[in-house]
Image 1 (spheres, rainbow, N blue to C red):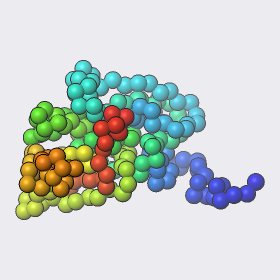
Image 2 (image 1 turned 135 degrees about the vertical axis):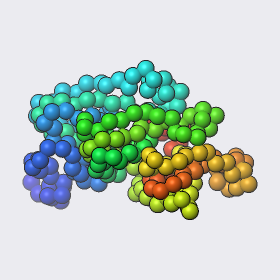
Image 3 (image 1 turned 90 degrees about the vertical axis):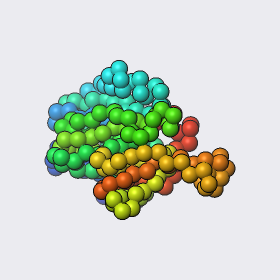
Image 4 (image 1 turned 120 degrees about the horizontal axis):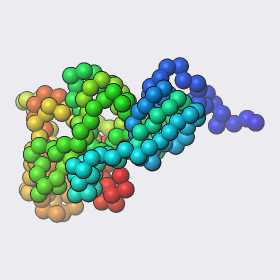
Amino acid sequence: MKSDLFSTDNMAQPAVAPGMTLQNAKSIKYAINGDMLARQGSMIAYRGSLQFERKGQGIGGMLKRAVTGEGLPLMSVTGQGEAWFAQEAANCFIVDIEQGDALTINGRNVLCFDSTLSYEIKTVKGSGIAGGGLFNSVFTGHGKLGLICEGNPIVIPVSPQSPVYVDTDAVVGWSAHLNTSLHRSQSVGSMIRGGSGEAVQLMLQGEGFVIVRPSEATPQKAQQH
């Protein structure tokens, strides 16, 4: 049987080392020898002897998810084998987090990560419940983090002299040590947010970067994630 479908680019190759690699732009392959964590429902295929188990976020995490519709519903994957992860054909990226790094990521953008990483669901400072009660997952430690993004992300440097303002529905994540606060721009609200008369952005200040996706989360999509 012959077809471009069977090209080397599309064929799954045996893993040469444990851990995660990009299978292609839309999926991540993880060679598991022990354990790892992934978002619930993101496994699209696996081979080998693997067990999948729902992992709770704890009472505080579940409460925050119920209030905001966000969160990080996880499953643990243990055993020996290979698993492939994806989410609605979103683009996939792998971030190497080193000791001393701290990265805050929206729960809807987390696909999978090494069990050596620590994560905690935290309130985004300065957001407040009135501003949407923004909650993100803060990752620290040492290991790899697999992210998803609708479209190609934009990474914008942040400096003390140049704060960055991002739409709260479009932000993916940022350097966790940046200072955050909500910024309301009434004068341009009618142009930015569908004539609502008021636009609310997340203002980031300090030294670091912010990751933005080229689309906004609709209420329906936010609930699905």
